[in-house]
Image: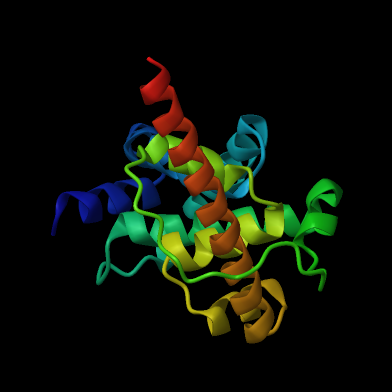
Length: 186
């Protein structure tokens, strides 16, 4: 039995110290997951708390055949999606609108950009684009799975992902050209 399995067993026995330790092990990472789907740290913290309540309520369902962190991550992603669906300020942005905002491009910008800068750009995407981009590019869900999770068609998921990607490509190129210009000025 590995360390996480022992910790889970202790948590299932309602050992408060073990529950606190489990939370401490995963809270920071999972807050980052929640923050990727929301537009504010306060919302991300709400999702994190709600997600951990679910983790402890359903811990008896955890099968030790997979990573505990991956199991918790799935709960956090689903909790974040449910949060987006039930909060009015996100619902309109999550709804697919058929307007062509940006051309879809398969070009890959050759840019060196830090993870923080890229994450900041992803957070600027409209909520629907941001959600689908995170689910597909970061979490690895297929468009069929995303469609099922969000109640949209596979084609809509693909389309919003392509638009999100194209918008990010445009922004990364702009970032790159702005930084090139700054290096010439200095």
